[in-house]
Amino acid sequence: MNPTNTVPLSKSQVLAALKAAQAAPFTPERPTGCGRAYVIVRGDRATINTVAAGCKTLGLMFLRKAYGTSGNAIYIGYDNADGRALAKAKAFAATLKVHGVDAYDDAVGD
Image (cartoon, rainbow, N blue to C red; front, top):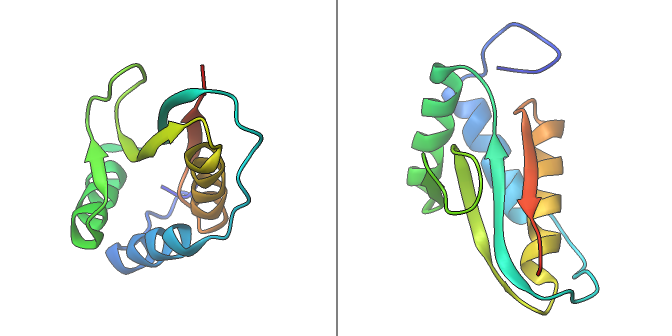
C-alpha cells in the first residue's frame, strides 16, 4: 500500500517502482566492513505478494524470511567492505518510497 494513500498499488506500478529502484544511481559509501544488504518492504499481504511477484519477474531475490533481519526482504547483495551494497540498498529503498512502496534499507557493515 502507498504509505500516504490507502489505494493499493497495481502490479504495473510495483513493477515500475522495482525497475526504477534497480536503476537508481548510488555512490559507494565509505567501506565499513562486510555484511548483507537488504531492503525491507512493509505493507499488507496483497502489497507484499505483488512486490514478491515483481521481484520474481525481474530476477530479484525476495525473501519471506531473511538471515539476520525481518522478513519480506529484497536481497541487494553482500558488501565486501567496498560500500557498494550498502549504498545500493539505500538508493533502492529510497526509490521505492518515491514510487509509493513502503520500504527501508537494512544494510550494515560489521
